[in-house]
Amino acid sequence: MFLARQPAKIATKDLLRGKRFPRTDWAAGIALTLLLLAGITLTAVIPFRGPLLLPLGALLALAAAQFAFDVLGRGRSLLPELFGAAAAAMFTPLITLAGGLAKELAWLLGLVLALQAWLAIVYVSTRLKRVQGAVATAALALLGVTLAAGIVLAGLMRWPLLLLFATLAVRALWGTSQWSVTRRPQVVGMQEVAYASGVLVGIGFSI
Image 1 (cartoon, one colour):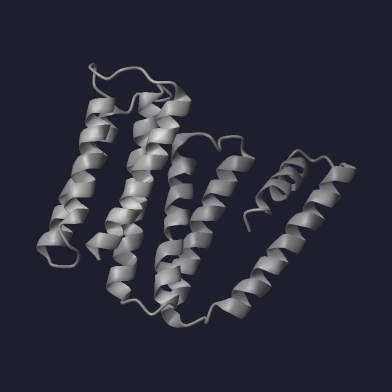
Image 2 (cartoon, rainbow, N blue to C red):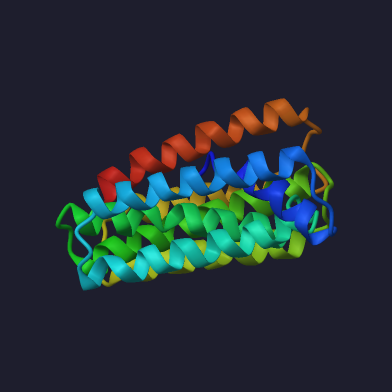
């Protein structure tokens, strides 16, 4: 499905412009072939029971929304990036439900990872001055801490989850403040990789 994205975008853009080139047919053929292989693989691997259909449908809908923005030339704007992050997070309940994890915990993990990804996207966009999103960053940071506290107090996950989101919130608020030090995009990107890796490890200790 991931490999089908680029050829599908090429073919769709050509057709929307009312133009047809040799590349259009090639791109459409490659995209359809890859999507067919993806469908066959999903059918063979995933037991299509009721609980798995909802995360799969959400994943496809969010990915389609991101693709629509991509075709319209707006794939790098904030909203489609949030759609893409949410689509990626849907793999979590899909995989964990297929592995036999409890439905509530599986969806909770997907929600936690989606929120972490959204905070990272808005924070990085603000930090690199792509958008003026300090207020949105603060709101997402507060939402993350509040959600984590509620989950821990409800006994659904353990205390490391709250520590994780508190750390992410401090990082985001400091990084978008007037006291933060300007960093190169490459440095900010590597920092986010480190934070995301820490989140995944921390979630493992929180379950």
